[in-house]
Amino acid sequence: MELINFKTGKLDIKSLSLTELKAQMEQIGEKSFRAKQLYEWMHQKMARDYAEMTNIPKTLKEKLEEHYSYTSLKEVCVQTSKIDGTKKFLFALSDGNLVESVWMKYHHGNSVCISSQVGCRMGCRFCASTIDGLERGLLPSEMLDQIYAIARSTGERVSNVVVMGTGEPLDNYENLIRFIYLLNSEEGLHISQRNITVSTCGLVEEMKRLADEKLQITLALSLHGATQEKRCRLMPIANQYPLDSVMEACQYYFVQTGRRVTFEYSLVGGVNDTEEDARNLCRLISRYSTDYAQPFHVNLIPVNPIKERNFVESDKREILNFKNKLEKKHINVTIRREMGRDIDGACGQLRRHILYE
Ligand code: SAH
Image 1 (cartoon, rainbow, N blue to C red):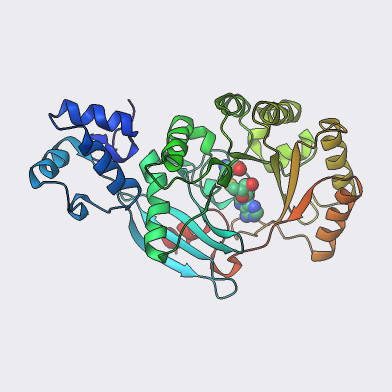
Image 2: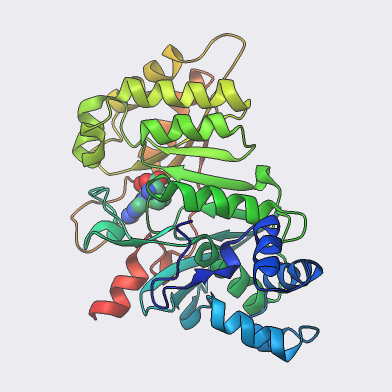
């Protein structure tokens, strides 16, 4: 098992399933009902440490300290948007690395956007998370901790989770899958798979592997360009995966799971927002749709300019034109509400702000 804490070299207790935890309790000579108690403390009551676990005897707590690592996050800073109440958190992991998470309030419930890696190695041109490359993947517990810390801090229920913060979730595949099962587990927060979204830049093999898991989560593909050439200009990773193979993987996901795939399309002024771009996107989507099934949904996102790159937003009229073009072809399309623009809302901005300024 690769669930070892980076700092302590010990097994990471919060990343274990209830069944695995039971086996561990047996191994250290404890009764198996302790596993259920511990699991609930970790994943329902979201305890920050063993000290909070009032019905666990002191001797067992000592044993746990000796054998396992217990991750928890330190809140480094929180910014609250004056516009929409969105909160952006910067957390320190136990090894001192920093990750960002965002809390958003919607009419249909509260959403948390989490990071899946420290940094990222995918290199997307407009994204601040990738500028310094990848440091490491997060443990399942460290993904959960972001949600637990935010739930505790806001005192509100989390109903949706999106893995759209820093990092490429499918580049941390095993830990991501384990995280989903833990988050979805009845003895934990029990967040429905349908309320979990995973966003990828398009790692084809892993997308297919994910489809074969037959989960009910939503897969979001960062498309950002409707031709191979356009996509390569914005996303270097596209060089490795021809657009057709990415589209086929999306179609496969839909066939295997019955879940409609979301295309994220960040509109960059003058780069991918022209009439021709809209036409190409319609064409691309229609090639993979039938009269009976619309396997995709397009989410247009006004690009969030980062100061390290000279990309600009499309103007409002351009964005509406783009949307209308798609609607005329009966494509499902929405414009993403911009949240937290005043608080370094885009991926990786806050971390860089704190690290380098
Ligand atoms: N690696 C994954 C998930 C993280 S990024 C992925 O690529 O999907 C989440 C989404 O935000 C992606 O669609 C990404 O392309 C987009 N994004 C990153 N920086 C952005 C910016 N400055 N403006 C608009 N969208 C951005």
